[in-house]
Image 1 (tube, rainbow, N blue to C red):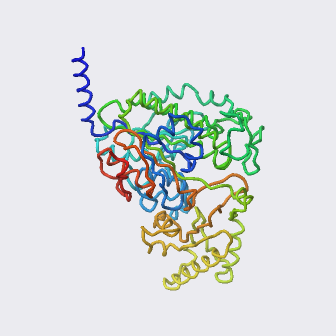
Image 2: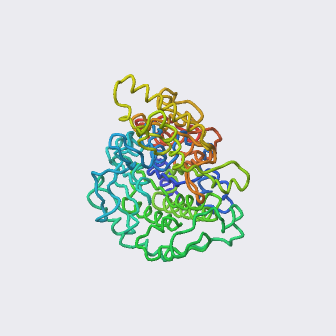
Image 3: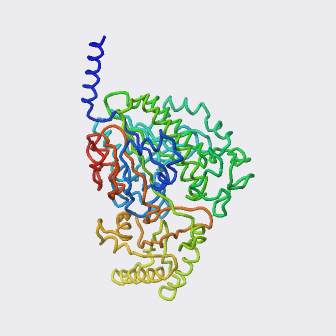
Length: 544
């Protein structure tokens, strides 16, 4: 018996040594998570979720986005392409298409139709993303034998990580409560997802009450539950205090959009991730697979309530339990030590300006309408009634080039004059830190530091505007309650990056790393070529 056990042990050891790459990579992106949250809520986490990753994995404590704007679409694209918007072309969640003269969505594709519902947000594909992703490269390297699946409550959170040639990308359709896809991928949903949708879990979660996990007085890491800086829920039960009833908040409306703004959105996404592991048999053979899971609910809650709220702490404490559930499932299905997980975020989040002002910290909200009116009035003595500004989008001004038609030389001079005048005016506005022309950004160095460097790395020469505007720290466009993100300041750029599992050393680093270092690190682990526009470098210290 001992001899038989010894032979089995040697065989198992030899098989493990022969494994030259993980069986499965699971990429977890938490929408709107600052690195600070790991420290702030650490004592409230259990041992099997965030703390398991932090203690047994390799954590980058000084990882940042190195471009503007720090939004969801660009964030997901940058994580998986290893480059910035200057390279992958996803310059916002939506942006102004200069040729079409209309706003376009980062994953919008009018050539496609929804799959899984008759009507819904299914005119979607990754076609606007110009670089390959690490998931694309895995498919190419394995002759498409690898299984690649992208999941999220948001379409862009599923589509961009999965790349251009996945086995599927699926996102939540709020009107129906189902996970759907697009004709870009397949003409129908897989059997496992149809079965999952038939369970109608969204309806079950809608009937639950969102109660605090702990007594309110134990949420010492957050501000008061009843705060004037939080956005009140819309609906018959308008309030911003616990407990919350999703069904009451929905009222007479139909659909399940309210779920996404509760931790039940994370629960539902974890459920479908586990169903995908089973249905697609991920990590079951010698070919490495890749599952991307993007948790969107923290972003919805964070926008409404702000990072100092009890609601945000609650959603992270509950997300901790989701992560534990997912990791335990991976242990059972794939085997501990056979998979690698990385966890990061697509951007951070700003504190609510009104709350900061109450603490005497400089902050403010810029309202676009009066600024634009003042700018138009300022330009009138120089250009009369000509419409100089065509569009303002994502902190960028698109000039109406038709207004400068005529003699090439005079038109060029007029355009330069208009650019200089607009710059001078905007630099005088309270809350604006800097203004840069497209020419200045084109002539800049990709490795340049500071605000200008962040703009250069986020600037795509064909898609971006003529003038870029950067606000002061703690300033953003918006209202008096709730918050947002998008800047080059640390609260928006400093996000978690944790590698865990197969081939990963235990430890941490305080060295600076841009978010673009994730994709090449995974490429090394998977033994595949780097994404086509990659600008990052592998994190050597994280690798065994």
